[in-house]
Image (cartoon, rainbow, N blue to C red):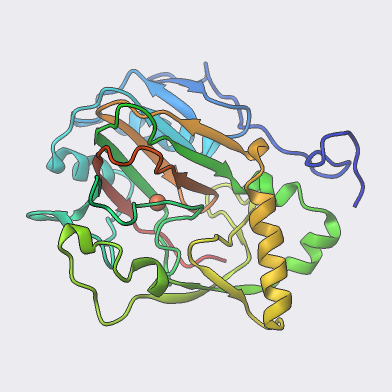
Length: 297
Ligand SMILES: [Fe+2]
């Protein structure tokens, strides 16, 4: 691999591509980027109110450009949260998680002193074990711990583009197994949710093309992806280990610090996230709606 500079992720070939930097081009919202590669805070919108289609379109554009967008101080009921999610597509029903009573689409996120595990620890995209994994997730944190509980997001276009051309050629056409079994079994026991007999499993391309942007992104994640198909197990393990190490480089990331009633909306097709459980024994809780996606190609 050719290394153009001292920075090992910046090569002479395709570079880490910055977010499009459209701040100033929006008419209805203000968009303030959190890092050169991923994440932006959006101001000037009230998510609990009915939104003008032009505002929805600008939020969608900001999401396409920044992969994860954040809103502060957005108190919403479960019904308002659901209504906001539905502006972006049909909502997904989680295969395992508990939901707000009367709102099967509104998933409960909660960790406290009694939790043995917490939601979203480790790098992942949501429910990638589904045959048609969710396009996006909209999480609101209601109760924040005194410190900690941040979420890190990583740009999988950038991770893919920073690979060598030889590695890209090697990954081209490969598929991998994404399994929900080891992720979900027992995960919600602390919330009184009984396990299902089985959880989804699916095969997806290792590199997928985003339906909105046409850009390629790395689509294996440490939580769900168990093996690359068609390779000997040891070779698959070694390759996945390398890809996981590569995609976790800080150069691809931003880190969001939650405040009560903040909302994060991320695109699972081109971003991974990691919820940091550094606040035990304190509690952190919230609600999430998840928007249906398409079969990755
Ligand atoms: Fe997640």
